[in-house]
Length: 456
Ligand SMILES: C=C(O[C@H]1C=CC=C(C(=O)O)[C@@H]1O)C(=O)O
Image 1 (cartoon, rainbow, N blue to C red):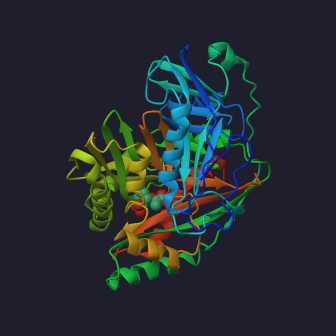
Image 2 (image 1 turned 120 degrees about the vertical axis):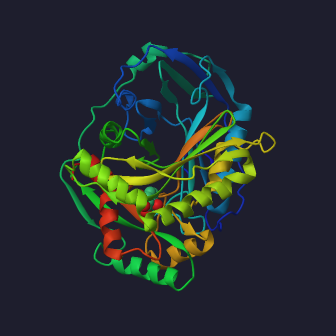
Image 3 (image 1 turned 90 degrees about the vertical axis):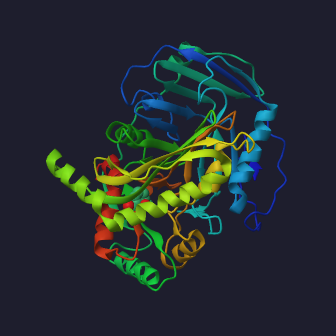
């Protein structure tokens, strides 16, 4: 783990996954939250405020938080990446001076985070090594919840100034620009070869090695102009309004799946698994027929049941009560429909678990890994043929009291250091009855949000 307010994070050289690295004392954060004039009602009002090209974002239906600048960055590695991040965040908070006049989820000190899917993989990003967990504490956060808008400034060893509306108006914003011409090329495993990977997954399931595995592929986008994440975020937030649009340390997307929200002792998880494509221009009547078909599909219901069971099992030790719906509902998105279940639970106060430690316990759910977890993860390592990096890992934010929201980084892309390149990801739950060509078509449908954001 490294705490680096100033120099760029450096992976621990030669350290194996989980090797403890002595943490330097974190700087003193000085945090001030004040109310702002309400923002206009648009879905994109928050992302429209973002001034720079490494934006921090967590928004849905116009509410959420955006941030910019970097007061502190905490990078972590290996199997301890969640626990180390949690401990480092607590250590930073222990020294922080905070005045929060709003006291809503997302006000006061917050850290945006993104974590790699796999703890034992290489953790190597598209163009070089990178951390397997990052918490980024911005210098400025603007949040909105219903009628209340606020601004938080976070300074390192600073004073408790409250720049308020004038400070926001004075923030210099470079114009947002489109990516120009975009070309897509095969990622680690080409589209033509991927059905064979799925067929291997099906064969292993039929042989009794495991019950479900989620297999994914990537596609590389090359853009004429450097990618401006704000361009993508604006388009995603406007079109995929029921999803959580996120941007953290170059991981960008609009996920329909909430790993967990932990707020004042109540935990919610939106579990998705089981998909049917929605064709462009499909009528509402046809969409309803598709939804009915999905709701009766035994293959999709089986896929879904594994995902719900894994979340319920992982959450149980932390909770005093839990509600797991008997039947899923159908979530309608512009590109696909999913079987969805909202699991809710009351956190056992004795465990005093932060949202980060809950994310660590819930990840990886069977919606992105499989059942049993270890067998599925091992099979992914063996046959998927690509490094997932932070795709399908937790992405979200944590506040001062440990509450926060963590989505699963789906319908997402990872921006390379070279801003002309992005890796787009999509995966599919595979069970004994899966058809490899149909899964390829489903993965194409899941690539649509990021392709649409890029205009390709
Ligand atoms: C793994 C992905 O989706 C998961 C979430 C919803 C539905 C899924 C499915 O039906 O296969 C997947 O489990 C992805 O979008 O990359």
